[in-house]
Length: 234
Image 1 (tube, rainbow, N blue to C red):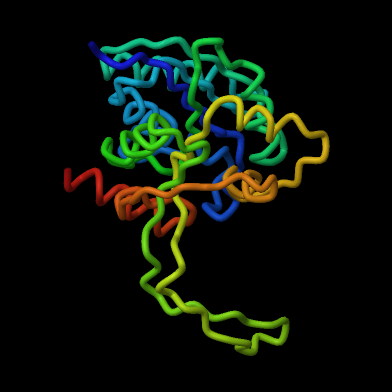
Image 2 (image 1 turned 90 degrees about the vertical axis):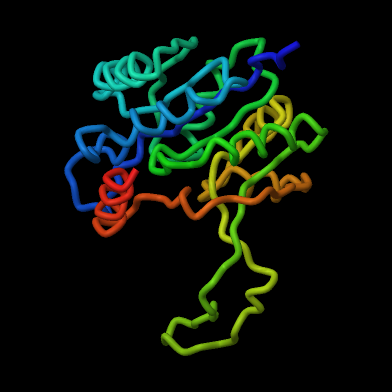
C-alpha cells in the first residue's frame, strides 16, 4: 500500500533577488527558457508524497505564477491541488501567508526555495522519511569546506571557527504541520533567513539529513551562469 500524499510544499517566491541585478522577482528569472519557479515546481512534482503546493508571489505576479505552474504540471504530466497567495515583504511573512492556505490533509509541510531548482529527489525523500519517523523539524545540510572566520566591524579577524561542527543549510526544510503552524501563530515573529531558525528560537529540536551540492541556491549572476551550465550538462 502506497504512503498517502500528505505533504504540502510551500514555495516563498516573492523575493526580489536584488543581488541578481534584474528588475523582476528572482523566482521568475529564466534559465534556458524556464523560470526558476517552473523548474522548482517540476522537481517537486517528482515527489510522490507531495499532494499540495502553495506558492507565495508578489501581488502583480499572481497571473504570471499561474502560467508557470501550469507549464510545470503539463511538462510533468501531473496535476496536484495548488494555491497562489500574495507574499509579504519578508520570507517569514510570505510563509505565514501561505500557511493560511493549508489543506486539512496536509500532515507535513516542506518550505522550499524557488531559487534551488535542482534539489535531488533523494533529499526530498530523506526529509519526508525523517518526519515519518517522528522528527518535528528536519533540514538538509552539507559540510562546510571553506575555513570560516569571525570578523569585527573593522574587518579584523576575531577568531576561526571549527568547521568540523559547521554545516551549510539548504531546503526543503520539513515540519510537522502543527509545529510550523504553532511557530507562525505568534504575533512577534522575527524575520529569519530560514524557518528552522524560528524553530530554534522556540526551543524545538531540529534534525538534519544529508543535503546535496546540486541543491545550490541561485543568488548572484555567477550562480545563474552555473545553473545554465548545469542544465546544459544534464
